[in-house]
Image 1 (tube, one colour):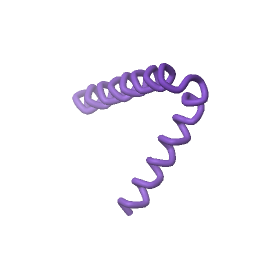
Image 2 (cartoon, rainbow, N blue to C red; image 1 turned 90 degrees about the horizontal axis):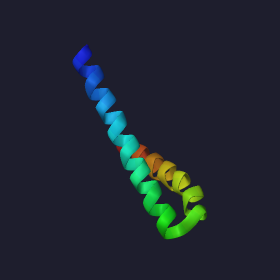
Image 3 (tube, rainbow, N blue to C red; image 1 turned 120 degrees about the vertical axis):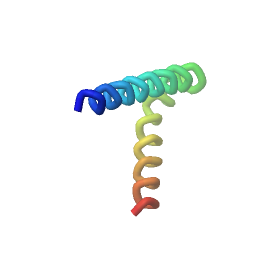
Image 4 (cartoon, rainbow, N blue to C red; image 1 turned 60 degrees about the vertical axis):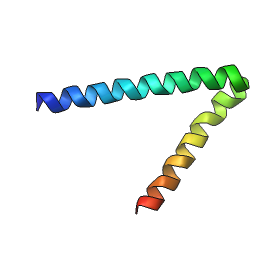
Length: 54
């Protein structure tokens, strides 16, 4: 049980680090409009992948 929690915690931290890296890159390239559209793009990609899996 404890090992699974550590793996879960590490994956959450890695996801946060990847998101912050992506957000920093988008802010540098596209400014605040890109930061506004980034969650919309990520959610749409997630929904498309979820439909493809089902």
